[in-house]
Image (tube, rainbow, N blue to C red; front, side):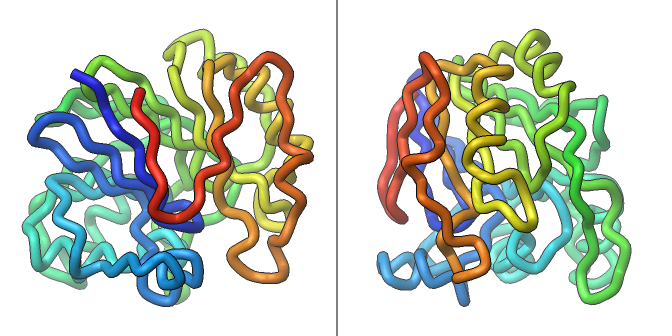
Length: 226
């Protein structure tokens, strides 16, 4: 069954396949891209919420959405623990880099990411990327990360159809480093994210031009099928 990938601005995505709606890093409220596109957290009804790390611009509206919908949290162990202690949300499916978890829609594997991870000064575990197996497609969301050579291994192990990569520089890879990452991973399609949300991460997206790979620079609210 085909899956759709909808960009919600910054690093937030909704992936849908059949009865499943998987929301990744749902920073919606306070996200200028989402707000300008008329995207509201209250209108999102995920079955699962996948979180790559604990920074505020990735946790975002996850606590409120999880409380309203009962969606399962799929995230690093410490983030799942935080949802239980701080938000009394026990429907969680924790993992860590190198491991993976089965889900109703398929599977989420956790990869390394080189970044940091905290929320209001609270340690939130290691940052991760995630590989989703859903609807016959394999989708890699790198989270926030630098370029690292094991991205080649991620490509070899998972053979993703789509790679979602941060390109905003300063806190993550810039566009040229992300282009190298896309080539190493080898997905047919690459989607840039985590750029042009605020002035410190403004970049020229045309510099993200990996060789032999289709780049889909989506505007907030736009989607593709895989």
